Image 1 (cartoon, each protein chain N blue to C red):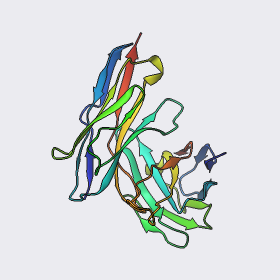
Image 2: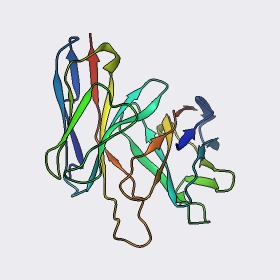
Image 3: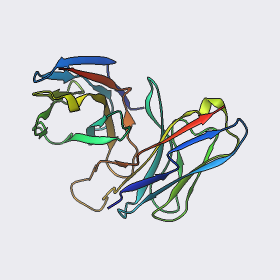
Image 4: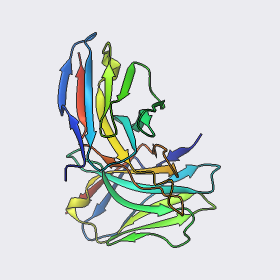
Length: 114
Length: 119
């Protein structure tokens, strides 16, 4: 069974600094997709970034980027120039292609210190 | 564009009562999902529907039933609520795009959640 592990239950970062959230996963599949979702106190689930396993290039979305290491089954999220609005719970998630559900990690709560 | 709409947003039940959580999406997605979120547990899959007319159990299906009423709507029913079902429930949808090349792993779109408390 696929599993997703987020080893950091809580993290904090100073405003304007950079923080990296860790995620590892276990799968025997070769084609799959990885996601980071943000959940602010409003409870909404907001897609931050996605990565296709068949792509070697790391995905980037503005201040958010990932370090995807397929052989190590690692998918970390880097947030640059952290802002107060980045404070939230962050979930790493995995799915294979097609009509398949997401498998989530347990989340990392990020605090941003002014 | 509403996306995924869940009703109600909050509900308090007594043990043994039944209720149905409603979910509707207006994105013409094939697949729909129900997850529950508990503190320290992330989101866990209850049931999903890969396409209209099909449903499958997820990781934590006990105590729940689902109905894929049509392509837009996917409801979750608690027949006899128990305190262990106190949770935040999320509905999600996605378009698998199986006919596309390369295989498509599109992100899921989530509703705003239902906070359910069972006393």
